[in-house]
Amino acid sequence: MTWLGVTRMSFIEYQDIIQDGDTAIVYLGHDSMFPVTIQHGSQTQTKYGVMRHSTDLIGKKYGSKVTCSKGGWVYILYPTPELWTMNLPHRTQILYSTDISLITMMLELKPGSVVCESGTGSGSLSHAIIRTVAPTGHLYTVEFHQQRAEKAMEEFRQHKVDHLVTVKNQDVCKSGFGMSHIADAVFLDIPSPWEAIGHAKSALKVEGGRICSFSPCIEQVQRTCRALEGHGFTEINTLEILLRVHDVRTIRLQIPDLGKPLEDQASPASDANDAPKPMTYSQDACSIFKSGVPPRETVGHTGASTEPEKMFQLKAHFGTWTLSSDQYFLSDPWHVRSDLANM
Image 1 (spheres, helix red, strand yellow):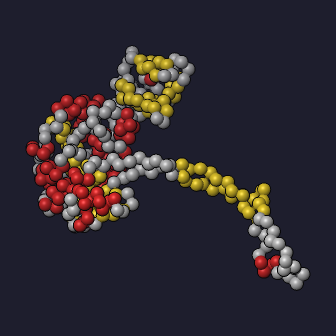
Image 2: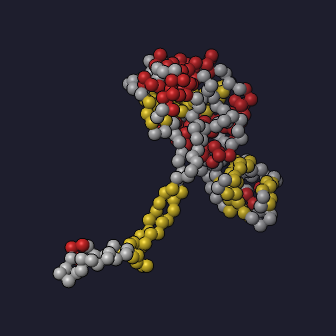
Image 3: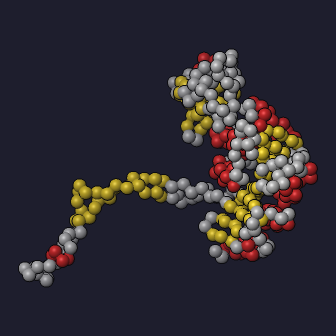
């Protein structure tokens, strides 16, 4: 059934009404949600009971509260790249929204941008890039593994964004992206990005562009930085994001009564031997404010994003310390580890 006057579901355009064939997010709680493909006549099991697609979902508005057969309820959410990142089927390790936000900013992506990506993986970053460059941009993504490439293209078609993306199954380190001087930006998330720097440079527009390489290991970052400098890239920066969550609490403190100032207490009648009065607290006067408390444990390292540009100045930022170029770029990995341990 197609509802008149309603466009088909797409990850780059919002619609109000749930339709047959849509991909929706079933939200049970902040840490419990999953994707479902809406199909006429189908049903979905949850811990709150059964949802029947034909009667409970199709024709309802996205964001609606749906009551299940056991009396509990769920919310049906419209899919966004951020929600898809949290719910997609993992074929590989993926990038999450924290790193994706930095990558899209550093690559200066905008509507109309042309982007080359390798590898596609589970498509987490790909969906975010497509949403950013739409409606006139394009993503060319390369995946070495054939089944992953085919599955990614199937998902792009299902999410109605296949007109904005081209998927290729090839080895970017050997064959490159298969195009020259068309990309505004190139992103590399592969085991040996330094082997693909030459192909990435060929894909960039003649007037220049930006490259970002995401690597989990410092040795990969070092070799990539050497390759970037060898191909003439400048202003090479390496960044890492560590998410630090704070528990925000409302604090209520009584205001102490400190008594009168000393100059007001001094008088001819006062006795120099009078003992100081103890500090008292007013029961009514209090100060209310917000306080942020960091947790004892923090989410650890995910990876480092390396972005070169035009003017050469190499600095690597990890957490709260900064490594200069001679420490980071020219030293071998064991010396780098020693430098970090002494900081």
